[in-house]
Structure formats: structure tokens, C-alpha cells
Amino acid sequence: MKTSIATVSLSGTLVEKLASIADRGFDGAEIFENDLLSAPQSSAEIGRVMVDLGLACTIFQPFRDFEGLPPELSERALERMRRKFAVMDDLGTDLVLLCSNCSPEASGERNRLVDDLGRIADLAGKHGKRIAYEALAWAPHTSDHRDAWSLVRDVDHPSLGLCLDSFHSLSRQIPSSSIGDIRGEKLFIVQLADAPRLDMDLLNWSRHFRCMPGQGDFPLAEFAAAIRRIGYEGYWSLEIFNDRFRAGSAGQVARDGLRGLRVLEDQSKRLAGLPPSLTAPVEPQHVEFIEFAASHAEAQEFSRYFAALGFVEVGRHRSKSVVRWRQGDINLVINSEPEGLAHSFDIVHGGSVCAIGLAVNDQQAVLERAGALDVQRFEQPVAPDEWAIPAVRGIGGSLLYLVDGSSREAMWNSEFPEPVSASQPRSDLTRVDHIAQTMQYEEFLSWLLYYTALFDMTKTPQLEIADPMGIVYSQAVETPSRGVRFTLNGSMAANALSSRFIHNYFGAGVQHIAFASSDVFGAAERAAEAGLPMLEIGPNYYADIEARFALDPALVERMARLNILYDRDKDGEYFQFYSRAVAKRVFFEVVERRGYDAYGATNATIRLNAQSQHREPAGL
Image 1 (cartoon, one colour):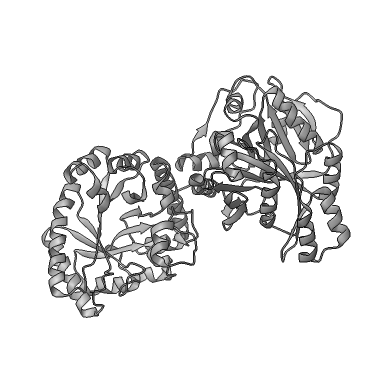
Image 2 (cartoon, rainbow, N blue to C red):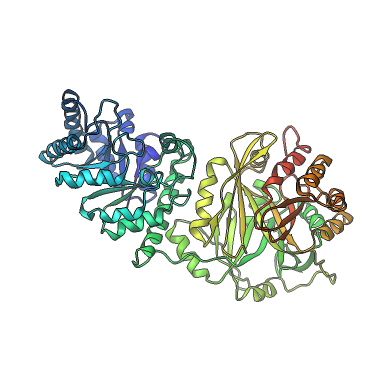
């Protein structure tokens, strides 16, 4: 796959954008005219910069409002095009993008469109240039790539071809099967963008909400597979209009773009029956452990919460200040080593989750895929008697360890041979249900793509949750078996809980952990008796759910006494309760699912309001 990205997709000056594009490994870049017009360098200087960076100029764009104009305006447009050819020579490209005409003065009379496109193709051919004609989804006359292709086909000029843009086609739900009618040699460039499904006008949707492949809801793999089937061999170029991206890190946006393209290449090849380009994604089996970085004082506080939830210390590391707590299939590790990653993590963030271990059945396949997708691997010296567990960097500089599912028991026995307590853990909690991670709003789509690109995981629809101080955006990624689930949360509101967490935590990270239970009422009673600081829920909530769900008053009274929240859908019921936060950083949730597969989103506002009662002016 020959990769490209439009400069309009990134933040910064034109030279900065090109440097980021080259640094991330793209083969080429589309030069967006407004970027060039505002650059202090001449077009020839920009062309030299691209050569020095090893970037091809894949296309110069856009050229607007040509076909169907009255004669006097058409001649003026041809003169504009002649002037572009000199700029294209400077940039080192022979291809220019012509968007379908949106001018109110343009006619949609077909013979006139064919004649005009023939004239501009003749002009381009005399100058050794080519024109890629694109149907804009909101254009009054040519808004469908099938119509654009019929015009290109009937003009039948070697200098006129088609530009297929996934947004313009998929936003209008044009069947990708129609691409099969296009001759591969007449497709001059492919532009790609994903987008969330929104009910709004096409122009604003396009201008503000495009995103990288894999970050939205479009069936891009089918679109790309249809293009592969016609033998297209040109550039696959990202054209992304998104306010969030233009305000963010150009390097991160470019990394996401290339990562999304690599995944799309693999998906489309598989659909088209071609050899795949990536190792197949692996489904993590379950969360094997969660590691907390903590000073000795912080470790005592975490231990108090763990004990109240029914965990017991079951082992100490053979050589390090690391303790293992266990209940059911849940392993919690507190690392108080005075050096190493956990120590550094604690200095920066305070007591918090520094690593998550995921059980996988093929460590090497995950590592190969991570390398191909520019996911950073973490390596550190391992003592001869220590168990080597490969890891990659995760959210906020934390780690994702890849635990061999077949040898995990041997790992625990080797690393934690010393028993600590003869006490048996309670059986209230069975496994890790989900892990909630909070990040800057600008990072949200990056981490969504990270999980769905690296692992066999899919995303749920995005939700907007009302915080007392703003809106929090939340979306889950989960494995097909639901053995591993992460919820991702971010907000643009400076004082929302998620934003305050990031401010006080100094970065993104795990904000809460949900444990599954088969008896949430018993778990809540025993946790309360053991002194777990519980999040208190107000009485109005219980009066509402009793009426809304027609619940037994005795059941509601018990839920109110134990601060248990409730939700129900067509598939089942959901019970949940929360602890207060440890050091205003990490809090815990206990859930019981009775056929219910979501996350109790209707209760998130209740929880956030309850947590806001403990908000301090300069903290959480």
C-alpha cells in the first residue's frame, strides 16, 4: 500500500506538517492549497522540502467550480487551472483534484458537463498533467461517485480520471459494490476518511467530524476491498477534516493515520481474498492482573480497600517489595519497589495503576502486530531468576503485559513463592469485569484505535454522560467473549471529574476498576461491615427507580441501604455499587450482571453527582 495524507489533516505550519508526515513513515502527502498559500516558503521551496524529506506530492488540491459554468466564467476557470500547473511543477506532482461544481451559476446539463470536462482534460494533457474528478456529497449536480464515473467514462480522456473519497460515498450510503463498474486504470487516487454516524447536514459532517480509519462507524473495509478488486495500485490517502485533530499533536494524528491505514490494508486484503499484510489480531482471554505502583504508605491504603472488598494477601515476590492479593480469578499486585518503572510511576502520579496483565494465547503474534502498527514495546533488564513477560506501552505511559495463558500458574508460583496469610479470600468477587481509563478528550480517538487495531476488540457506540460540571464522552472496547473490557472516558469540560482526574493525576490513566460478583448484595454488606468507604447515593434516586421499573419496595429499600444502583434493559438486569476513591485517584466498582451486557450508563450521572459531593476546590 502506498500511503499518503492531506496536509489539512494536521496541525502546525506546512513545513511542520510535512516533517510529521515523513517522520511517521508516510510515502507521500497531498498539498492542500490553503496550507501552501499561507506558507512563507515558495511552492518551489516546499517542493524541495518534500524531496529532502523523501515525500512524494501525491496530489495538489482542491480546484473548485469548473464544469457547467457559463462560457465567460468557464474561460476564467481554465485560466486559473493553467496557473496551477506551474505550482504543480514546483511541487513535483502531475495530479490535481477537481471537485464537482457547487456554484449556483453552474448547470447540471449532462452534455455540457461532458464537454467541459473534456476541455479541461485536453488542457491538462497538453501540460503533462492529470485531473482526478471527485463527486462532493453535497454538490447539486454530481454528488454520487457513480455519476462522476459515468462522466469520466464518457469523456474518455487519458488525462481525466476519478477520485474516490470514502466520506462522499459512504455518508450517502452508496453501495461499495458499485465500485466494481470502474476501470482500475481510470481511478487516479483514493481518499479515505472514517466518521461517526451522525444525523446532520453532509457539509458540516464532513468539515468537522471526519476521523482516521477505525475511529468511526463507516464500513471502510468493504469500500477498500471493492477498490482492490478492480486492480487499483495508486496512493491511499487520508483526507481528514476534524477540529480536534487540528488542535492536537500532529505527530500523534499522523501515527494514528498510518496505523489506521495499515489495519485497513489488512482487513481489505482479507475481504478481497488476498494475502494479509498483518498477523491476525489476538483476542485477550481475560485480565490476569492489575499492578498498582505505591509507596509503603499508599500501599497500606490500597491494602485497606482490598481487604474490605474480600481480597487476601496470598504471596510476596521472591526478591522485590511486591505483594499479590487475590480473590476468585482476580489478581491485584502492589509494587512498592524503591526503583524501576513502578517507582517512577508513583513519583509522577501517586499511588495508581501502572500496569495491566492480559492473558493471551499467542504472545509473539501480538508483538509482531504491535511492531507493524508502531505500538511501542517496553523492555527492561530481567534477573536470571525472574519471569520474562513481554509488554507494550499503554495509556499514560502505563504497561500492558502479555501473559502466556498456558503458563500463567507457573509464572505466579515462580514469582510469588512465599505465602503471606493462611486466611482464605472471600468469594464475593469473581473476575475483573471492566477497567475504566480516563484521558484527554483530544486523545480519546487515539486510544480507541489503539485497542481495536492491536487486539481482536470492537467498540460500542459513544455515549454522552452528564457530569455536574460538563459532558463526559464514554465508549467501551471489548473482546468478542467479553473477557476483557475497557471503558474510555474524556471531557472537554475543565472541571468535569475526568478532567480533574487528569489534572491531579498528571496524565491519563485508570480511574476505576469494576469487579464482577454473583451476589452483589452480599458483597456490599460484607464490604460495608469491613469498613470499605462507600459512595453514598441520595434517596431521590431510589424513589425514581422504584416507580420507573416497578421494583419491589423491599428490594429498593435494601438497595438504598447498601448504596446499590440498578439498571435494566430487554436482556436483563444490572446491579452496581462504588467505593470512594483511594487518595482521590482510583475507585472500585462491584457489578452483578443478570443477562445484561452494557455498563449502567444511565447511572453514571448519578455516580458523578454523588462523587461531586466530595469535590474540593483544588482536587477531586
